[in-house]
Image (cartoon, rainbow, N blue to C red; front, side, top):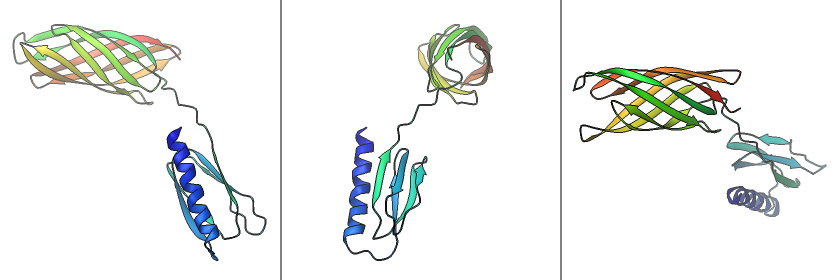
Length: 187
């Protein structure tokens, strides 16, 4: 909210400066920030109403224009994969034991943030992101043979009704494998 207020104050100051310094020709104002609407109330030289839905927009202002800047609240987009999943993982390592496996469980919040744990041959945590297309990218951290190990988890999720499904791969410096999971969407 403070960021929106600062942007609105900056826009008003910039526009006021242009209007009260005798600007006789059209000037360009760049508005940077969240969704904003810029509307002219001048009858002599109106500025086209501009909806700003990206982070930057350009508005032409003339010396006779009166500008009103209104913030428009946006509704956060919910990630379609929000919910909880659990499944199994397995693979091979070049160190002992050569065959590894276990289970894991993750939760996905409305922004697509992933948090979870895995256990079995190794035990650790998982943190990452699922985008709105179901692409999972996460990092697992585990202690293996006394050393801290980082595992990369990548996969694809799908949602049908309220059922979540996922398949993918995991890897670390000493091996790799696959994982599969099912779960329930909280959408």
